[in-house]
Length: 237
Image (cartoon, rainbow, N blue to C red; front, side, top):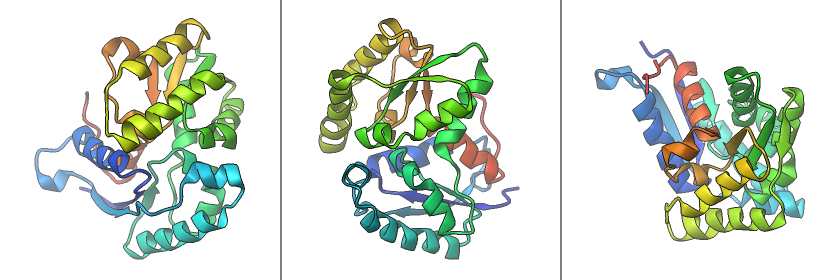
């Protein structure tokens, strides 16, 4: 029996939020509607860009808007809140102070999953927005769990940003070729043991099995935590 309702603060971006909700359904072991978890979804697409807020240092527009959203989810009866946007976790401390409802820490849960999955892993490649890279949220978690974080050099980071903002956000193109090439480079040239998909737009791109085995997708981690904390049962996939 489902014991609690999940609040989803989405819209960052809308495609990623839709994929997140779909994956919750796909990953829940259910024989009937009532076996799925209850969700309250707030798809606030008009939220200010998180990377721009971090790079400019002008946080107030974003934090003021998200404060209202968190209160709405709290009033709607959410027992836990999921925010399927890696970059927004730069503001995690502020967001958690704005609500009494626990917010699932997507970044910390992802790094913890990497460490607990295989203790021999040492080097982690990061595929993320400029804002996530600059924020240091993954770097801080890697230090806590004793992992070395490999941040792509400038040219590779520009390619990652182009996939996020031009290919996926602007054009809705989910072709995996460019992302596959970057993952292969991080594994081969930069000796990464795993690569973290740390942008939910990148999580929308289906990867071939060959690359998928080297990847930990932060969205998938958040999906699983969301199901478990809401009283659902994970499907064996």
